Structures are given as C-alpha cells and as structure tokens.
Amino acid sequence: MRTLDILELLAEQPRPLTAQEISVTLGIPVSSLSYLLATLVERAYLERTRRHYRLGPAIDRFRRGDGESGLAERVAPIVRAITRDLNETAAFFVLHDFEIEAVAREIGEQTLRYTFEIGQRAPLHAFAAGKALLATMSPDQLDRYFAKVERKAFTPRTLHEEKALREMIDLVRREGIARTREEHTPGIAGIGRAAIVDGKALGAFSIAMPLARFDRSMEQRAVRLLNRAVNILQGDRGRVPT
Image 1 (cartoon, rainbow, N blue to C red):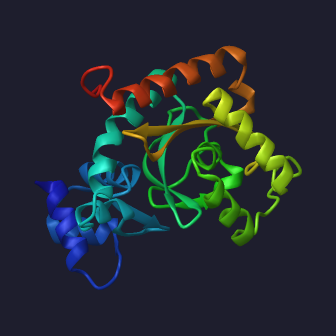
Image 2 (cartoon, rainbow, N blue to C red; image 1 turned 180 degrees about the vertical axis):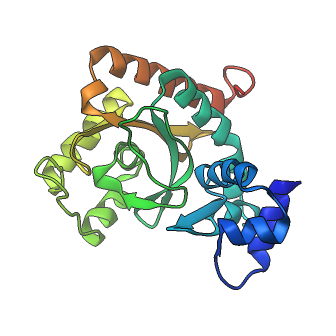
C-alpha cells in the first residue's frame, strides 16, 4: 500500500518531491521510506535527481499499447536470473531506429559494476547487444545502417569503420555470440546474444562487467547463461525462472 501511495502521490504532483515531503504527506516514517524509495529507484519506477524524486521510465511499461511492454515483462525475470547466477549487470535490449534501448536490466551487487537505466538508448556498434542485433539484419538493412548512421569512436578500441564492423558481424553470425572490450566504456567488457523467436529477432540479452573479472572462465559462464536465456524465451526449457 505504501508503494502505491508513493507512486500515486508523485503522479499527481506537478514537480518532483523530496523524501521529507513524501514522508510528511503520506505519514511514512523516514526509516521505512528510504528503503521503499531505494527499491523503486533501483527498479526504475522512480528517478532521483539529487534530493528529489519523480516517476521513472519503468512506469511507461504500463502506458504502452504495443507489444513492447509485454516483452519487457517476459524478459525481466530471465534477466534477473542471469544476474542472480553471475552477480553481474545483465539486460535485454530492443532495436529502435538503428539504436538499442534497454527494456529490462538488473544490476549486480559488486562494488565495482556497470550501470545504466531502463529506457536508455545506445549505439549499435559499441555494445555487445547492438552487435548481436546487427548480425540479424538483412543485407539491405545493413546497407541502410552503414549509409545512415554516424558511428562514433568512444575509445581507441571502438570498432566504427564499416569494413571492420562487417567482418565482426560475419564472426557474430558464425558464433552466435557478440563481444565488446572497452569499445564504449573503458574497463568494461560486454557479451551478448540475439533472441530469435519464430524467425524474428525480438532483441538481445547482454552481460557487462569490469575487465578485472572478465576471464576465460567468466566468459564461458556468461555464454552458458545467455544461451539458457534465449532458450527460455523460445520456450525450449520450461517456465521462466523466478
């Protein structure tokens, strides 16, 4: 009830509110409120800017009339299961206008970790999930992508030139797994796999972690979890883990 009270209060207000304002208005002790607010921010139902809170991007899942909200609900527990097993950041991205958008994500409990928000968009060429989705495109789609999109070199390791990217796409198609290593964020490695259901690429699962923990053993575990995630979404391995 308190969670619903918080969401309804912020939905009705024309401006963000502080925790103290929420506490006084709803009569929730600050000690209890802090935990509720932190959980809502973690799940992206709220956004925090300094001391103020407003509704977050996850609320949009209840507003959308297309199938994307349903997909987000389907993949969210699978993403949570990846993070539970690996204790690293996991996510599911969908394609939007030659960018990827996170519709589900779970952050590991490591002190050193990679974070981003649900609803955040990112360039295809510099993220593992983006590379995985590039590998699902038809030749005509790829031609349009390379003709239309300006590909920024975020770090010295970013693959952004067409020839190198096309070679990488061929490799991802052969292996089924996409990899990045400090291509968008220094010190971060990513690994991703597209989820193809009934011949259609619904999006891509990905795992991101600091290079300090990304060794051969960790990579093998990540690949197994990504394969399991896709199998679950395809319906090959029973119910979604909780």
